[in-house]
Image (tube, rainbow, N blue to C red; front, side, top):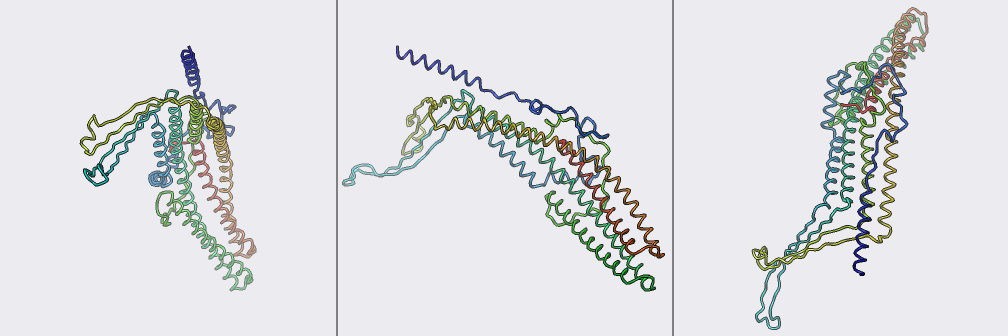
Length: 464
């Protein structure tokens, strides 16, 4: 009677455990639902905003050299290669996590030698050698799916790392393009500074000629010489910026930073078409958001695995071995000794370890969800501010282009006026400085406008 009662109790407990394990499933998460409310369109709307992102934003700049450099960076950049290695590590971790679902077998061969027989007088004693071959087998049956959930979590983590590799490639392409534009600007700034030195030298000769004829004071010549010295200092700084930009770009390309890259061509015009899509598309398109979502699902699986650890585990075990003084006899069936068993392990008290694991994983799920939401919000902010910045930078570039035109005209009039004694040296020097500053600022904003367009493509997760 007692035996039947115990058996019935065991059956009922088993059925409850089966029902408990069946209730453990990952929540059906949807990225759009997690980010509601979310606008249907970007709040920053420009005349260039369309409905679909470009397939290859690098080619939109129509610079073959830039395209080749991006390809070189994607092939030889060491940080990207390290990111690719992390993907392989993550994939290996998936295999490791799934290993407990398979039988685990180990073999322990050993060799021993000793004397056997009558040890009192060494009569009939002899030395003999023995070879032992012992094996152990264990196999945990993943009845509840605990090991499977842990493997699924690791697999999702590997997918997140792989997705981040795509993001790293996109970021590298963007930094390469921006570094290329920085090198172009540095070269153009160098040209402008060199022309400024030539203009100041001409100005010094003009003032010296008037001074020699007694038409101006020595102070005018001193001010002109000071201005020429400042222009030469600016040219030296321009040379320095060229070598800095070249070396930064060479490192991105995986080359030795020898400073050998040269670029003396104009900055390309801004591509005329900007395709932004809608906010909802960003949740699937941006690698960092997609990776964050995979990590949410991975934490869901870890939480499931932690809960299933409370259920009993069933393990099949086997052990055996053989011993012989001859290797050929060791493999004979009659030399084998073995046993097979089944074990049931039900956790009862583990010092709050299992409960602590559950609470930790529950908190980790919340953390992953909040990190996903923050990643998405940061992505929306990057798109919105880049779209807005393009509008403001475009207006700034147009204003500075007009400033350059006026400054160059003012400089010519100031030279004419000073040559004929109609203005002072200070006005003339101001006109030269104004021209240099306007030209330099115009080049900088043109490069910033190109960089911002790359930021738009990067923020939108555009394809390379």
